[in-house]
Structure formats: C-alpha cells, structure tokens
Image (tube, rainbow, N blue to C red):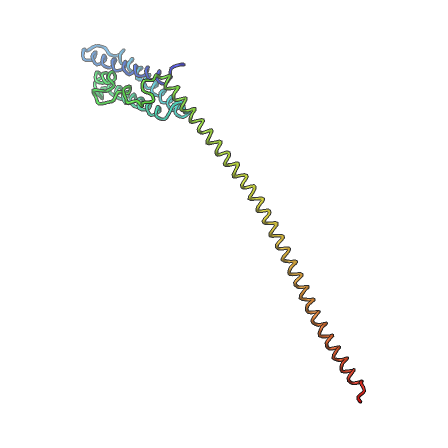
Length: 236
C-alpha cells in the first residue's frame, strides 16, 4: 500500500524549514564576516516560497481528507496540530529572514528538537491514543478505513430502520384514510335513516289524526241514529 501522501508532503516540508533555518544562519554569518550574501538571499527567498506552497498543499490535502471521511476526526485534529506548528515556524523563519525575529540558530534548534528548549511540544512526540500507538501510517490508515466502514454500516442500518418506519407510517396513513371513508359512509347512512324516521313519524302522526277524526265522526253518527230511533219509536 502506498504511503499516505499527507505525511510524505509533511516530511518534505519539515526538511525545507530546516534547510531555510540553516541558510539564514549561514547568511547572517556571511554578513558578520562582510561577505556577499546575494546568492544566499535569493536561495532563501525561493525556499520560503516553496515552504509556503507546501503548507498550502498540506492544508488542501487535510481539508479533502476530512471532508471525504478518509481519516477520523481525531486524526484530522492531530494533523491540524502538526500543520499549525509548521505555520508558526514559517512565520518565525520569515521574521528571521527579515531580521525581525529570533536568531536562526534558535529556530534551527527548535526545528531539530521540536521546540523542547522553547517550551513548544514536538509534534512527533505527542501523546498518542492507545488505538494507534505503535502503528505505522499504513496500519493507521487501514484502521481508519475500518472505522469508516463500520460507520457506513451503522448509517446503512439506520437508513433501513428509517425506511421501515416510513413505510409503516404510510400504511397507517392509508388505513386511516380507509377508516375515514367508512366513518363518512356510516354518517351518510345515519343521516339517511334519520330522514326516513322523520318521514315515517310524520306519516304516523297524520294517520293518528285521521283515525281520531273518523272515531269522532262514528260517535256523532251513532248519536244521531239513536236520536232518530227514539223520535220515531212509538210510545205505549
């Protein structure tokens, strides 16, 4: 498996920073001795530009690796710390080149020792987690890929659960629609039945009134018949 391009670029960038510190120290020595420093100055300026481009490339590679989940967030933070240290050293080298900062021998010493004399932690000697301690770059990369695969599997399982829940929700919604249709049909049936009951009630009331009128008429007729019979019946 090919080595991680980020660390390959980081190593070459670190070597350029060391070379710049040595060149600045040499230029300052020439100046103290009254020698010509033009050639060294041009070389240092070119190396500083190369260092700037390398740091920009490291930033781009790190951003791409984090955004595409090629590395874990922990590894991304670790590399960002290394990159921040490089940016700080670039500023120190640029200031020293312009004779505005620390002496180049101090910067070179800081580069060689990881800043132990200046209280700056060596980026290669930081406290690694137990999971990656003692592992090479390829092994760390494989471990990261395994973690990413496990995360992908977890996301797939979560997606499957969400899909099933969505399907269940749709089925429940369809059943509710059917139940609402049944309720609407029942409401229409009840309304029709109620209307029929009211109609039949009106008919019964009408028949009842007619029956009462007929009964009274029969009684009146009977009374009239009785009166006529009494009137015509001969008395003894």
